[in-house]
Length: 117
Image 1: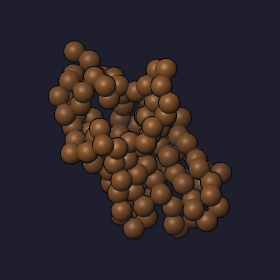
Image 2: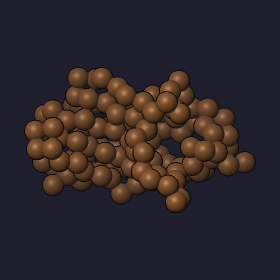
Image 3: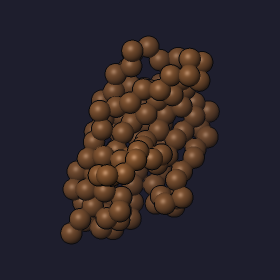
Image 4: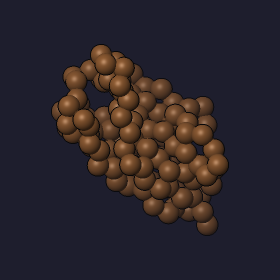
């Protein structure tokens, strides 16, 4: 099993910044992908950004140039720096860990991000 500790959500005005962090612990293989997904009310959960053990990143088109994902393999931690936030970024953000060796996906409990004036 994998456990997550997520932090950093909250309320911010349009144009502001937030930083999300997620620390994973438990039965984690050495090779895995971590990332962030988000789900707005009434919508499906969508990928925001992912990063592999080797540091390769992937971003949703809607956040490219505004969000930056990073990870610390030694601490099993992934972070998401979110700049120039827009009201449409409002959602619950979920930390995600995918283990290719077992094709298993794990989810954090989610943290609310609200962008509003």
